[in-house]
Length: 281
Image (cartoon, rainbow, N blue to C red; front, side, top):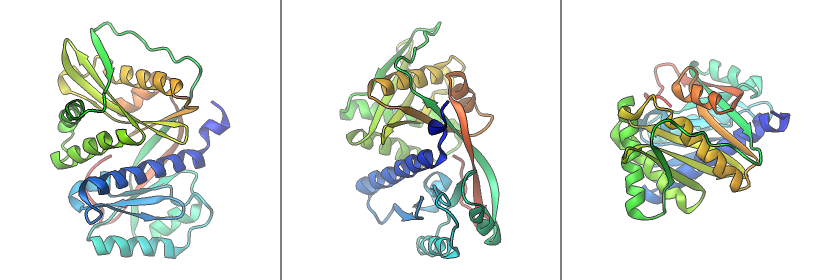
């Protein structure tokens, strides 16, 4: 993989744009009083109700433009205080050292990590055939089909223990973004919906996200097929690069590596001791 593909500044900028669009989508659907963002220059924090956990209360892209002034974190704290919530900060391993130092001084501690994988897209990305009768389709932008996607996404994530309201917001936002930058996918096994996934196109980069496989269909290679189908479409759409994020040691990280993604860098998640919001990526 080329150095340009691995460039953390490019990848963090794409991730920042991704969550900015997610916030904008949620604001359009539910109002700016419930969902907001705070610029970190560079980077962005998305802020919502504490009930939605870190998934809708976290920041990315911070510290990627040299030393971080204390005022940057103070302003974020003030904004969170107004919303009666806190955010976790996902810090790139290439961020300026002043960022992690400032977090530690302010009572933040590491809570976990996120692998950021990248892949240069070649003219032809092969799609492997599975031994099971799996059908993969792109979701048409119509209310019935989008509702099928939303239901499938919620059903696939239900076993994670995340609140149903959060799962609905995440799937609803992805469906809404089909008007802007997102392509949605469904897989069917023996005629039944087995999994779902999305792909956002940001500045020529394909961001693979919201992968979900129903419990009864797991262990059959469905997520890998969803990844390969999106990579193939990304090439057709002229994307030069694909990115996917996953917790280390999870099935998603293993599947990303199996289809050819390489680890670009790691983000460390920081939360204020005693103040962090609950929930996992």
